[in-house]
Length: 380
Image 1: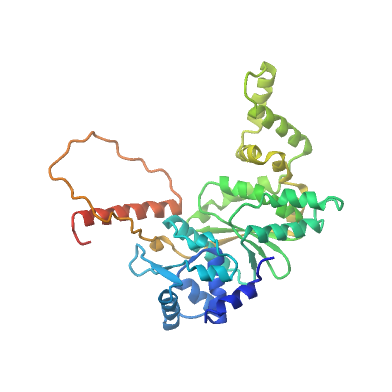
Image 2 (image 1 turned 60 degrees about the vertical axis):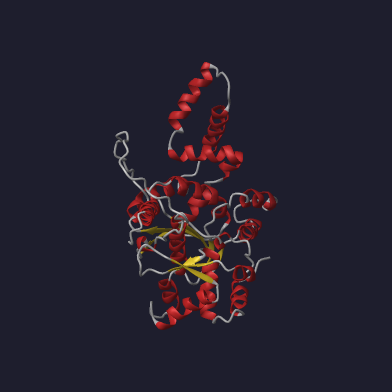
């Protein structure tokens, strides 16, 4: 059994942190590994950039608990907590958050931390063991399973919780399913709902909370469409039978009988939507367990108010927090003098990028600019 939140906080207080500082660090260590002073100031109710706020981060860096990462904006301060002892005392010595992160992941983790900080009363489950224990407990309670088969339901549900996003529990026991939208297309969100349908079936009360950074909140309608398809429109048993036949014959190799091919063509027209395409991809991985997803229980929970969908739009900007990378060559090669003929090339066509992809693209461009200046021995 893992440590409780209070046990982790007291373990961090042994490093001579106050209760408030330890509670903030516990959230950072479990959810992001990175943070900015604004987040600590808002959490503690102190001035951002004030004496107490700056002293806290100076202390983290001075003791080797954190390292400051240079950002595109020269006044932005981004900190990475990578000290092994801090992760060890909270029971997560092998956490992936100890490792250095790419600009894209750093920004996404800051967004996730902002979403978590906006829900201070929620107790979060972040590790696979914690999620499995919670789901097994709910399944054993028989919320949506025959009393004589709780173990089988628990096993089928547990193996589908593979997301790295946390699951929350409110003080009244209501489950909170958190999803951070970082791209305008919804394939990832659809997979997320299909994988977590097992939790929604067995949880007595639950809330699906969507977190949108600007400007991705403009795509809320697309995400709402996925919710209607995946949660509010359960599949009829006859449709499930047709899908099993279609998936099996679609996967089969070798020559196909003309009559079978005709039925496959009909199935392609009926099941060629994004919902069933994503379901087929998951069926190839986990088999018929994919059909245990959407159920009338989930739709009934939404209708009766036991389940709900909420959305949060993060009010902060993250573009100025893109980290700079120190991957310039130790010994830059001098640029050869003279001109060199080159084949004419078409100008690159830039496709629509997500917020994080745009940040990473800008970071690479800026980094190449600095590297070129160093090679020319020009001070930026």
